[in-house]
Image (cartoon, rainbow, N blue to C red; front, side, top):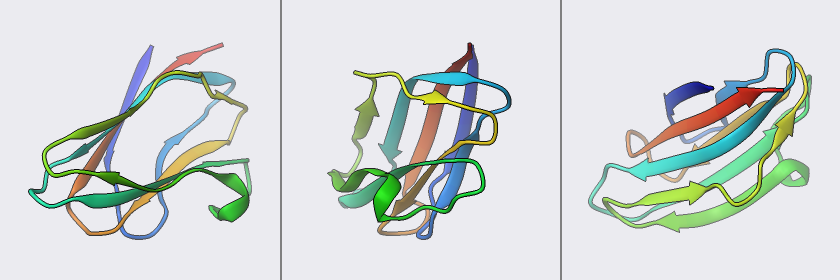
Length: 102
């Protein structure tokens, strides 16, 4: 099992890129700010770019000091596929992604 961590930016930020085949086990998005922030998450095929067609959550509000968790379904990624995200403000949302090679 592997852990990837990153600060989510205000433009699409790559949080995890698959090397070989991987599956996510959980994704945590912690808002370290006192104010609510919006979060958008993308699952991007290798060579692609983040956009409407690969959005899995759009402008989900993460209230100040809380964490949004995606763990009900695994996401299977092929080599070069990535998880990307953007936040409505800088220096607020921190991501932790747990994955396993398959």
